[in-house]
Length: 261
Ligand code: BEZ
Image (cartoon, rainbow, N blue to C red; front, side, top):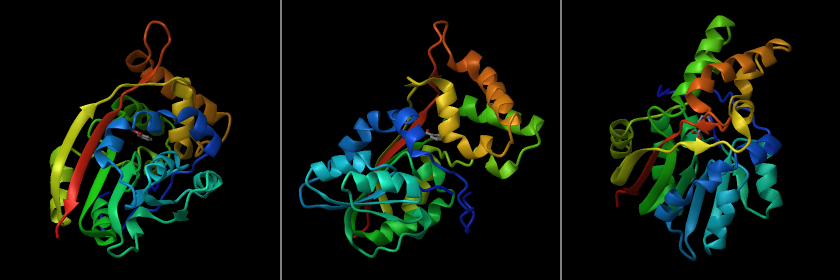
């Protein structure tokens, strides 16, 4: 998962990952990837790039389908887990893909929203693909984690935190991402924005600690715990039901596009 506004220069990545936290609290990322994986439909012998492969869970599924897959990500910790699974992976920023006409398909799940200069990412994907190669992906779409993001902004304001650390994500609309893909040399075949409420088996604290780690780590203890508890109480009325079960307010943008010949 590579991370880093739609400005020309990509803002430096700020997210840090714990492989253990990700394995425990982020399992839904792969468990709910069935629709985008079905859109990829990897075939035996195809050369596929998994952009933002994380710990390689889906990379392994692409490999199991018989494809020759390479995963790229920025997190050393998650890449180490992927290597332990016997996968071929490389450390690379999604804004700086350096492949030339090598892949039949580029796949990305739950990673593109961390890459905040999408023009550069899409240009690198187009260059990496063979003519008529496909780009299939899913990312957080407009409105994703709205309650969580608003709570983090509120906590950041009252605690005078670093504005660069709050909600470092790119959640585009269908129109915005379609325009980016088209300008980048793709024909959009399918693109949808879907609300996908996601049950959080390990609760909200796990989500905040895993996906908001760099944000909360800016505060020294005991302020860090206080900030976390404040965020939890702010989202509780929206995301926790009467039985104490938490659901993340996920919205997904899912697309399939073909590079021009
Ligand atoms: C998501 O998968 O929607 C997501 C993950 C981390 C931060 C924000 C959103």
